[in-house]
Length: 251
Picture 1 (cartoon, rainbow, N blue to C red):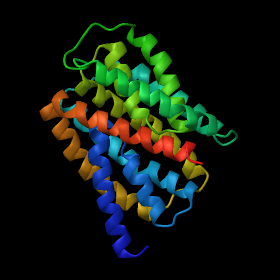
Picture 2 (cartoon, helix red, strand yellow; picture 1 turned 30 degrees about the vertical axis):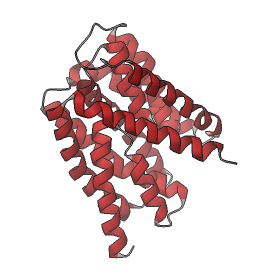
Picture 3 (cartoon, rainbow, N blue to C red; picture 1 turned 180 degrees about the horizontal axis):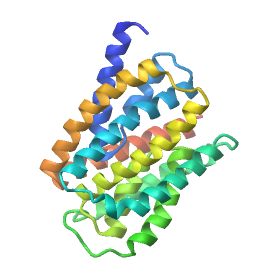
Picture 4 (tube, helix red, strand yellow; picture 1 turned 90 degrees about the horizontal axis):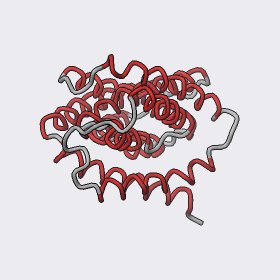
């Protein structure tokens, strides 16, 4: 690739890492940037998983170091997410994702409506509605599978469900989301690498940008809390929903 294109991808990585570390949705920036360089879709998807893995890892480490995430509490969730992502990324090799890609925008719309109407959502810790083990059994397997199978909106589903069912503040929910996103991303990345669908030069250049953006974004999210995360989260969910409806329902 030309140096100018690599500079463009580095900048896109910074922007994607920044947004993704706060509210998810970094793929809205990263994947179109990769596709605009002329990469085939399969390679663009695999390269996006490579650079995204670095961003989610950086954000997860930042939230953990600041005490927003307890990895011991996440252990069972990491296991179920790993199993789900492995199953989903394997199944996508044989099945079409057309049905689920058409369904997801409406699920995201439900997340958006719930978040907007619940004005106090995620401001303070509340009582969990279900046990942690049961939550991770359902959502770890389900969202891990979804991220391996298709992907867009996974972060929004994780954050919203952690707030709604586990009683987390939005800041803590975003931190745990990054841990789970990293788990499913690295599983999917392994599948893309095995299939030879990763362009390492572009992916590693974007990864450098992702690391920088994720450090900046996670730092702001921790410092400013839910008052900063909530509007960014809503904007990302809106943008993701519009993009998916446009891609899957235009005639």
